Length: 413
View 1 (cartoon, rainbow, N blue to C red):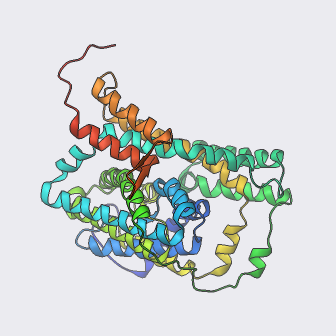
View 2 (cartoon, rainbow, N blue to C red):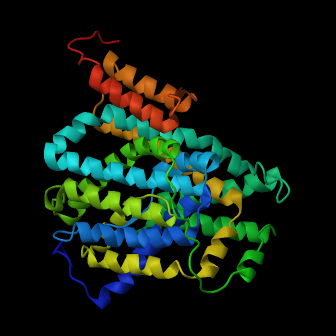
View 3 (spheres, rainbow, N blue to C red):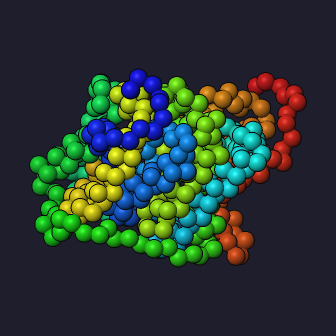
């Protein structure tokens, strides 16, 4: 296909569907590995989430794949430690409903209302703080902190930086399909180096069965976890809009009109809530797959149906999850050194792309307080619920944007 022609399902698209899952695989399984969730469950929820998205947008389905969202890594890690996996899943379901609410706001108020509520001056620094808050965890993983009994500091640093360098080389020098899977290739090289150094424990693979039902975790609903997780949905919701613009440009079809943000946000929200019901990470649109669509000129969204079906099938292979569990921490740390910085850079890119003037006192107040409240460890305790981290930063940014008057004139510094 040379252009978008709508949804056309046929078996010949299955090979391309498997290829697109290969592109998304590294990032998809990275989130559960980092947060302590089950990678097989993440594959399952990515598959059913993508199918749910396609059902919601069935009249004009965009050729996109939904999988694990990086924006929720830090919040999920904190929530799991504080309230447990089950309560965190309840919070993720609530975050999905936040997407649904945003979709109805767009449906009845128009897209302009969403941009007024969440302008770049708020979204940019909120996205940036996600990467900045995560950066200490990446450094600790790269240094092997907490795993000294398994490998030394020197071994950890070597593996982490070897993995990082391999990933950077692929990102900057590779061409074609290889350029779309730098994370996966970086992990493979890091894993190989770890194996040669004798620090990979293969016993989980030997003990795992070939086939089995993924270890689903069903949700419980606790107000603290729910109110903590809801504001986190703001950043990936805006990222979703950017992804819709990108895939529209790639496929030469305006998906912002058909099916429209009111439906794509709804589909994303339902996919995220579905993930929470089974114990998987929240879903979001994957830019890597969009890039693969552009490279292969394969615009038929039915290909993503095959990608989703493949993900669901792989979820029931027990050995796969066992293999992923043997990846040494420094390998993941090496990848994270780059990715968490990339997330922070995306936030800055939003500010630059939309020409946010930081010499305007109003803008500098909003950006500054988002950074300090989110990164500085501020906790807003209202007795029945408390806010901190990215969620608190997002709330502060939204409130300031709504209450601070527009600056009519200011002296340039």
